[in-house]
Length: 181
Image (cartoon, rainbow, N blue to C red; front, side):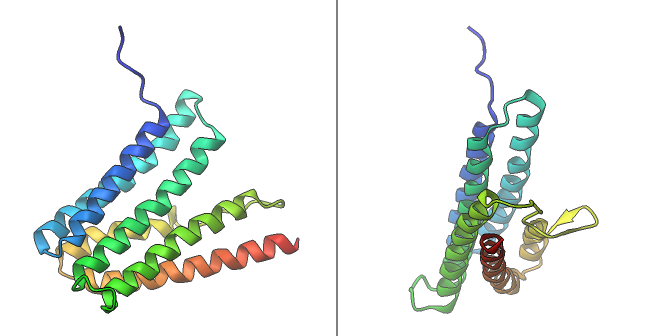
C-alpha cells in the first residue's frame, strides 16, 4: 500500500485552511496573534501558487481545479478582511473596522464571482490582475507581513480594503464590456 498522491486540489484546500486560520488569528485582536496571522496568510498565498504548478507538472490541470482555485482565492481574501476588521474593531457590527472588513469581504467574494464570469465570457482573454515587472497586483498582499510587524496593520487594512472594493468595481466594468462585445 503506497502513500496517497497529492493532488493540486489538496494543495488548494490546504491554502484555504491556512487562510481561514489566519483570519481567525487576526480576529483575536492582539498583536501577537496578528503577527502569526500575517505569517500564516503569507504562507497560504505561497501554498496557493503551488497548486497550479503541480497541476501543470503532473498533467492534472482541470477546469474544475482552475475555478476551485479561483473561488478559494476569494474566500481566503474574505476571511482575511473580515478577520482584520473584527480584530481592529470592537466586534460590533456598527464599528467602522468591522463594517469595512465586511465590505471588503463581500467585494472579494463578488469580485471572484465576477472574475469567473469574465473568464467564461466569449472574446479575447487578458490577465484579470494588472501586472508590471513580473509582479501582479495581487502580490501586494504579501506586504501584510512587514506592515503588521511594523505596527501598520490599520493603514494597510484601510488601503487594501479600498483596493479590494475598487478592484471588484473594475472587474464589474470588464464584465460589462465583455458582454457588449
